[in-house]
Image 1: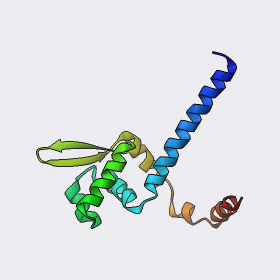
Image 2: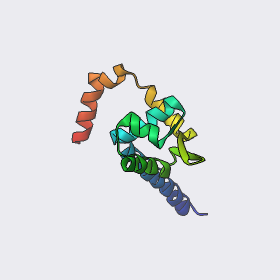
Image 3: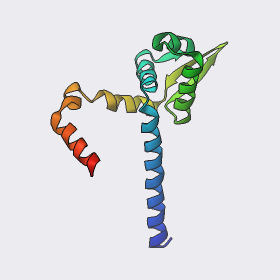
Length: 122
């Protein structure tokens, strides 16, 4: 493998990783999906019916969110008779752990907010 093809391969790996992370963050920018993730983290496993009751969402919308989360490997399903329960994957558990590390102080820090606003302008 010559140097150019090696650099091209590394560049493609970064593009693939960047694309995946962008899709993941876009998916999680929706409040209901984030709530599902946090509920599954807290309760370990929930059925669609339980999520419908907790989130006050329709069955079709809840199922749609779960399908989307399953496609990016954040949740997995387990069938038990007629009921399907959902749980977080290890990847999602690690992701939630990182999100939980953000304290309210981090989220309310004015210096960080100003920096974000300035960087978005550029």
